[in-house]
Amino acid sequence: MGAVCCKTQDQNFGADNYGSTLSTQKSLLQLTKRKDADTSNSNGILSSRTDGAETFKFDHDEIYRKVEQDWKDEDRINKEGLEYTFYIEMKLGEKYKGYLNKEGLRHGPGSQLWPNGATYHGQWINGLAEGYGRLIHQDGDIYIGNWKEDKAHGYGSYLHTDGAKYEGNWLQDKQHGKGKESWPDGAVYEGDYIDGKKHGKGQFKWADGSEYEGDFQDNNIEGFGTYKWADGRAYEGTWFMNKMHGKGLFTWSDGRKYEGEYVDDKKHGFGVFTWPDGRRYSGQWRDGKQHGEGEYLSSSGELKKGIWEDGKRTKWL
Image (cartoon, rainbow, N blue to C red; front, top):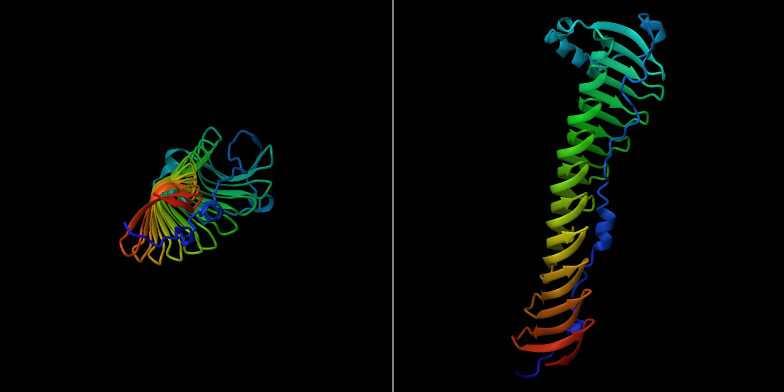
C-alpha cells in the first residue's frame, strides 16, 4: 500500500474517563429511615388519667381521625371491646391517648407523644404501631404509610426536612420493591430497591440533565446500562462499581464513537475509534491510550498497520 498520512497521536480521541463525574453525581443520595422514636410498649404505664384537657395538651390529627373512622365503620371498636383513654404516661415520659384493648395495650386508633417531640398518629395492634399511621421525628422528618410490628412495612412515604423524599414500598423498615426518590435540586431516581438499597432496574436523572438507565447493585451503577450527558455524549455498555467496565459503545455529539473494551473507566483491551469523516483506528488500548498493534484507516480508504505505545505510533508494519 502507498504512503498514508497518519498522525493519530495528534487526533482528538475525546476524554471518556468520567469517573469523577459519576462519583460526584452517583452518591445517589441514599434516604435512610431513622429510628429515633421507639413505639414499643416496653416502658410500661406510669399513670393513667381521664382529664386529658388539662394534663395532656396533645390533639389527635387527621390521620388519627381517618383511622378511627375506618374502625368505627367496620364496628371494630365495639367488636374488640376497646376502651378510650385520654391520657397514659409511660415510664420514660411517652404520653398516649387513644384506644386500649382488654389487656391494656394500645390497640386501634391512637396518638403518642415522646419527650423529644416526636409524635405518632395512627393505628396500633397489641401495643405496636401496625396498619396506617404517621410518625413525625423530632427533627421534622416524616414517615406516613403502612406499618407492621413497629416498622415501616408496605407502601409509604418518607419526607426529609431538606425536601428529599422517598415514596414506594417498604419491608421491615427498609426500602424494598418499587420506589421513587426525589431531591430539592430536581434529581430523581425511580426503580427497584432491595434491603434499603437501589438494586435491580432503575433510572436516575440528575439536576444537570444527565441520566442513567439500567442495572443497579447494592446502591451502585453496576451491570448493563446507558449513561447520557446533557451535552449529547453517551455510553451504553457494562458497568462495575459506577465505572465503565467491560464492553461498551461511547458516542459524541459530533459523530465520533468508540466501541470496545473498558477497564476502570478507561479504554483498555481491543477497541475501535471512528471519526465522522471515516477515519478509524482499530486495535489495542491500555489505560485509555492506543497501546500495542493496531490498524489505521484513512478517510481516503487506505489501511496501514502499526505499533503504538502510550498513545503514540512508534512504527509502521
